[in-house]
Length: 314
Image 1 (cartoon, rainbow, N blue to C red):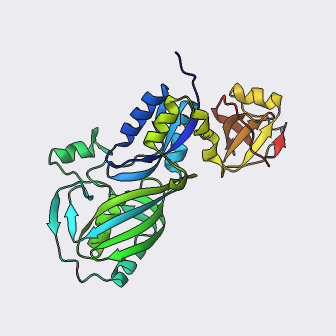
Image 2: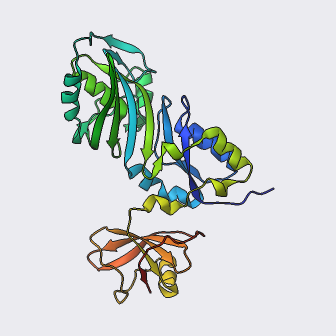
Image 3: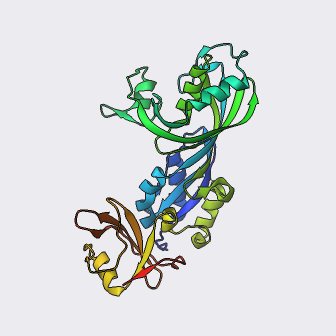
C-alpha cells in the first residue's frame, strides 16, 4: 500500500552512539517518505534535540541550522584527546588539581561574544575536497582557518574537579568539542568533552522531544499527524501577513508583488512569511530595497490552520 506524502518537522531526542544520518535513515524507513533530512548535525557522542524534516519541510533545514542552539556539556580537565571528546585516543595528560572555580569563571568570559574558533580535525568540514575526519583517520593534520562564531552565554552548572558541567547558548557553526579543548588550554591543563546534550534547537526543546523508538512506532502506525510540527513553526519569530487570492496567485507564479499593494515595507534582504485567507502557508518573501518590492523566495503548498494575529493584506 502506498503511504501518503506529508510535510512537517519531528522533534527527536537522538540516542547516544548514532550519527544524525542514522536517525534520518531509521525515520525514513519507518515513514516510507522519500524526502527526509535533519536540521543540524549531532556527533555520535551527543544526545538531545535533532529536528527531522519531511517533505516540503526539508526546505526549512537552512533556517533550522541557522537558528540558536543550547547545549549542556561535561568537560574533563587534565586529559586531551585527538578528537577533543571521550571517543578519541588520549594524547596528553596534565595535572588539573590546581584549577579553581574562580579560574574557570575567568576563563569562560573569554569565550562569550563573537569569537574566533578553530574547528576540530575530526569534523565534516572539507579541505581540498576531502572531509577533515577522513584525513585525521589517516594521521594527516592540516591547518584550519579560525571562523567567527557567536556565543550568547555560558553558565557553570556543576564543578567537581576535574570535571565541569556547563550550559552554552550559541549560534551556527559552533563546535562544543573545540570549546572543551580551548577551555582546557586557557586553564593550562588541557581538557576534552566527556558528554554532550543538545537542550534546544530553535523552537524545539528537549522537554518536548520524542524518543527515536516512539517516533518510529508512530510513523509505522501512520499516526504522523499526532507528532509532526508544521514547517512554518521554524519561522515563528518572522513577521507574517495574510494575502488575498490575487496576491496569492502572483506568489504562486513566482511574480514580484506590485508596489500598489499595501504590503509592509521592509529593509534590504528582510524576510516575511505569507499566508492565504483560509490559513495555508504560502511562501517566504524577501524584500528588494532597490525596487521596493517583495519577491517570493520559497513557495509551499501546505494545508493547515493560520496562526492568529497576522495582519491581512489584499
